[in-house]
Length: 329
Image (cartoon, rainbow, N blue to C red):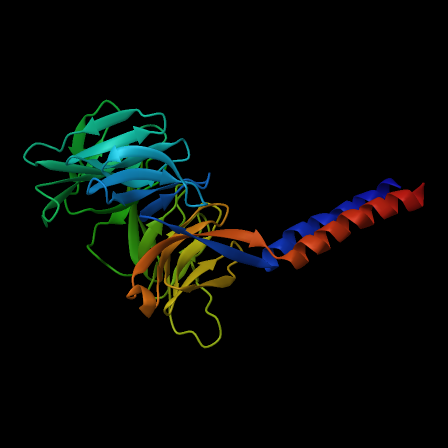
């Protein structure tokens, strides 16, 4: 009996992994605002415009498009799994928590504005210092948890370093050679700069260090050689705009929003662009509405759902386990 039960459970595990992964689909929910980031709890950070007050508010939605946190005037650029939200309010870099806490970070000396783009679980804040929103002069800035600010150039010793992102453990990703194709650099205080060869340009870095990009569209998981993003029959190009620690990639195939699953299979989501994706495969991005809406763009969250056929197969799998057990007794 034990052997048959073990075998049946193995079959069931296969059904769960294979059938559910092969029969994936996504359900779209529209957001009233602009989404910037999604964490692994399906919380979405962004900004919403208030027609009553004429102001922009930093907000957090759930995956149904319901606002679960109104953080006040400003824009939210990022939300961490621990619930820290990075952004800008009243020309200052801000980190909010979901309980109403708020910390401001001043720009480095000589600048008048600051903005936070990312915050690690240890409280390290990454952003920019500038003269105004339209200024072309922006300096990559790192704030320590105590608020001490320094430029990325001062930290790394290379003022020309272009910062593209940071992992949750504090590894800096960017380029020491400008917008150079086929290579990127990482930096830590222990290793200094380390160069990495890739097939294209990096557009996104996940918290653990996975990267994706384009020219051609590609994905590189930590410790694995980069691979090109698969294209459906007849498609011409792919771009990866966002990548999760689990390996999902959000992007575009020609003019269609697309997501590549952990096995590298591509799924088209409709007209538009997929921007970010989390470990569960939940995607945020934009769609283009038709002529009746004056071709406006809308922010959308796509939530992955199993196909009904997959659910039936899995239920049959559970039933077969029970039958095997009853037959043995």
